[in-house]
Length: 135
Image (cartoon, rainbow, N blue to C red; front, side):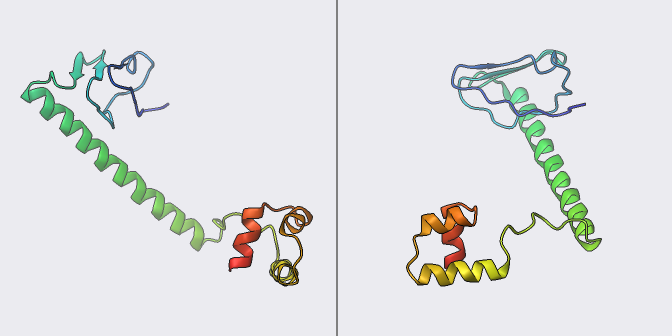
């Protein structure tokens, strides 16, 4: 089950229905002028420029809690990736070209062969070819 949503609405827009959609609302990430955000279940309404001191405080606390939760998630994710790398399970994408193929591309480019033709021959993009040449 999803438990977070990032809601973006333009000036004069209305962000609502989050609670009705089955989300457990905790915070809103971005709040621009002219936007109204309503949390139906909780009965909260936040309107830019129309909030009293209590609403401003509550909205800022919700934002701070959201940032804290996101930082914790990133830390746990980094720990999991480090653990997977240590176990040899997180290796990333396999290289499309071998070292020998990359050396051949560099040599042939140096000999003046057309880059577009080389990229097609090795089934790589021209951007990848230029990156290989630059290395």
